[in-house]
Length: 319
Image (tube, rainbow, N blue to C red; front, side):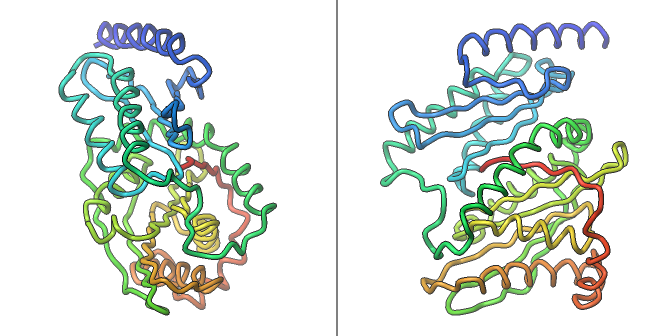
């Protein structure tokens, strides 16, 4: 076992050295000791089609286990995310025991080139279904805060992620829809104890064609780490500006842990303004109360005022 781990480590070192040489500034070392890296991948002719691949290399890679990965891009939605995940997993199965990061990167680049050729216009970084009612300072502040904390949360979470990677997909439950002016909102909830399970839940949800076709799938999760006595947490707007941060803030106020909530919104063509945030949070609050992650809505709201200073470690993966 020790010999195999040593061989894996040397193989990883050689692979990282080669990738760094090939990709230059696009290759980034987040935490060398924890084996956490990321690479920016883009179509050189259409730079708006850009994606960040983040990987954590377990001690079993490449002999018996794949890298743990996340795909991050503002435009990356359900069907595209599922397609890319399937590509990467197929490559791993076809090249068992081999270093595969280069193959992964080039397959993603091939996908981006194809997207840029077949999608008109290119991706937008903010959905056009709603008027902008969040000021620029708030958006910049949110982005800066979450981006700065990416590395910390990955370092804290990588061991828990490896422990969960082989487990079954957590059970997902669905809340009652809320409809307003032809828009429909529905929350989905799953217990999670690692970022790997978050990925599993998202992939499972995106297998549902109705959910995958939603205009937005906003999500947030909070995981309590006993090893660090802190929280690993993240949120995603999926094009609904600032909705993910608001959802995460609600979960912080309610002091929930080891759970993720995804709120799907199907846009009906009529702008809702700030009411959309109310519906997103109400969906989330209702499903958390229903499944006993917090007390009743009224009680939890009061209770949350005393919980807002809990010790948290936040992260942001740009999608």
